[in-house]
Length: 430
Ligand code: SF4
Image (cartoon, rainbow, N blue to C red):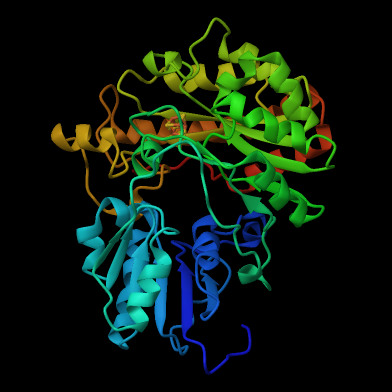
């Protein structure tokens, strides 16, 4: 913790953890939202960051204000932390996706709630706090236009903590698609905004050498706007990873440019290999998903493909079909999720309307538990199928087959072994 300057007001930013992680915490990424909040905080404040994944929250510290971010699965823990500080008379502000979606709920545990992106309203909130006129709600304006203006994140607040890397940034916010199970478009508004390419490249240069991770929801969602960024990165000697939808691979030139820019791994959401979600517009094209995956794999870039189990047209056969598809299409790193109706999404509204939510215990809305009644199987069968698919895909022979079939074997093997470490043997229950 830095030396305290008695003249400066002290702000504690907290990233809540729902469970303790072992050694794998060294492969986690730091919170982007708190990095941005720290960057938007005027210099007159001293900022201290507590990431509960790495350390205990300093409940007894001398802080003037506490800011806590929360996604849905973190909300319960965020409220516990907030309540504890408030019981000592320390003011608390809650922000992030969950408080933005359910501000009334969050306000039961906070002095103020930030709705939407924090950067535009954070300096005003701090001024109001120091002047003793803190309001209950700070609602960020709905983003407009296609230019994203944000401060460079503050990496110094992560000093002393061990992450995979702190060289993280965003080139864009939003997504051109609007998947019913995803909060991105609702949270960031309908606009899909990119930063000025030169500014992104300048921030990248400031990072120096080392692994860089783009935390965009869909960095290649607009190939025309992503292209100058990738072109500028080629030749910088970067090694980077990010997330996109598979559609970018329809353009072979863009795939080559991705590899030339230093990309070593890309996370793609293919959602479903069967049924109506396999033909979602974002991946529907004259090319098959397998063809597009192969194109990327052939360049040596690791492809982490994410699938979701539990759509309304998924029956019990989906598990076996998905595992076979992922094997045959040579995905480098399969990732399996259970469909989760997060508050704020169209899916949540639908399941709530249909009376299919099993409960609203947000701490269990973590895409590893079943929180709704699936249409074509029981909740228990969905959980079991998800567990079996993960277990089967990360058996050593399955890993060996994936790794031997493509280029980039050492990185590929390392990723797979790391992932295998977090996978439990199938068990009963829901
Ligand atoms: S493509 Fe991905 S980021 Fe975009 S709305 Fe769908 S799930 Fe969300």
